[in-house]
Image (cartoon, rainbow, N blue to C red; front, side, top):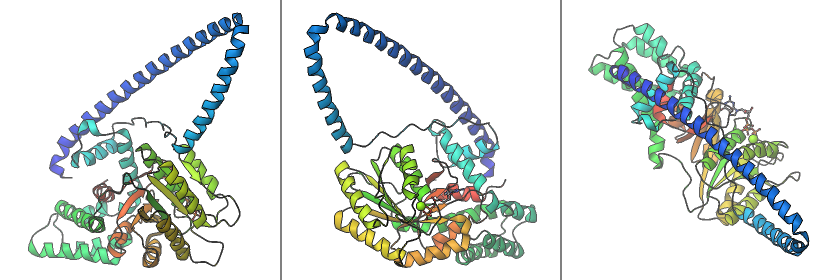
Length: 437
Ligand SMILES: Nc1nc2c(ncn2[C@@H]2O[C@H](COP(=O)(O)OP(=O)(O)OP(=O)(O)O)[C@@H](O)[C@H]2O)c(=O)[nH]1
Ligand SMILES: [Mg+2]
């Protein structure tokens, strides 16, 4: 964001706030109207029912025969309904639209980030504002003593070779990794040799460099935004070591997917943790997505995937989300288990689009990076999901994942709620990581 645009953007944010407030009022009124209509409808139905009962009483003898026939017809219809239900999927539950918060610095910053990406005032939603607020807050620890410290040190002075050393330390401290730090510092050094770079311009250049690093694997993959492809079965495997947030992330993805009208199904292929299936069912229930599982002890994860694929085919599912174990009860290697699951998928649905997404806990920093490297070697990964960006000082690890493991980051999670996961957007991420407050 350019600072000279700040005043205009603030004005833009105020207009956006007013519009959202108006929209929320209208929605409330609409809801009240609907509730009133619903009540009236129910009263009317009740009245009709009573009248009908009265009539039935009078014509009881005559109707007895007909009622019997009707009952038989109903039973038949119920059977058809059950059969139909097996073949269709449930509508996603409506999860309450968030309440509009205060018109404060959080709102203004979030609105400015949206405006800078070309969003129109009437296109923004409270959920988007809430998410950006959460992201910026989440990355607070990462950027603490980053931009603020750098700007404080520099004052209004231009960048010097010494300030580059400071910046280098700050990037390493945020777990951005040696490779990406070197890259950024070298680019800045070259620029410094060519021209005088003021503090603000330095930050702007830094943002561009970081964005470039993060965007590279995304561009290389040829897919800017990962979404299920229509008319094909998409299978997304969530893999990673224990406790990084695979199951939680899967729950949030199920919500995003069903809300976006993709027919979604969950396969509970983590058969190690006894509570894993229950945990998934809770998530599935929240977004009305069914969970295919096998409760028997030591069930084979690949067999669960086999069942889930059959179900997915029957139900015409768009996206099958597969939860996998972070630990196994046998001596089998996690990678072998994943390979077995993949083999089943290839055999059952050769034309499926398979994504193997490595889930990484940002708070594990360089440790997480090590995991990523060892998984990447043998698990044929296609992307990464970074979780727990809320409240960690190691958000920079996202850069290391892009630069050193060459994985496109597809989603990021910043919280334990169902809405706390969004498709990854490098612009928003870098703006949040280097926000100046
Ligand atoms: N703060 C925060 N907590 C998270 C986030 N994602 C997951 N968690 C928490 O991390 C813990 C572990 O999450 P799970 O989803 O069970 O992790 P898992 O990878 O499935 O774990 P295993 O099945 O044991 O391998 C839970 O307490 C989650 O609520 C996040 O983005 N932010
Ligand atoms: Mg799990």
